[in-house]
Length: 83
Image (cartoon, rainbow, N blue to C red; front, side, top):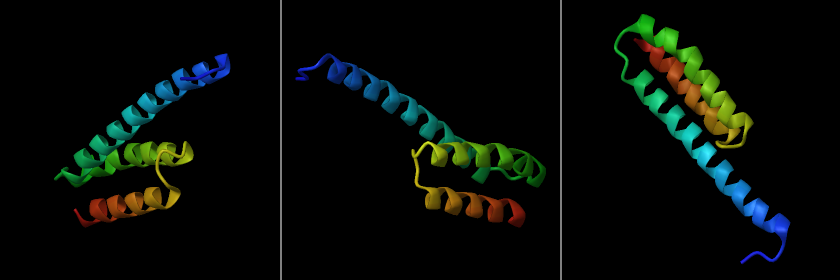
């Protein structure tokens, strides 16, 4: 158990941040799945900038690695172009 007041606060803060990161990551993964399942090119092209923005936000906050974000964006752009 923590011995300092600041350590107790840090434990509470870490849990809050962890839950927020999990929520954002899961929401982005669901958006990616939705985009990959899209059949219509116009709808997919409209959805792509929103998903790319979500991926960039995760990378900026170090929830996912920068290279993973780049790979995801590249694959999604290729998928939309191929529709």
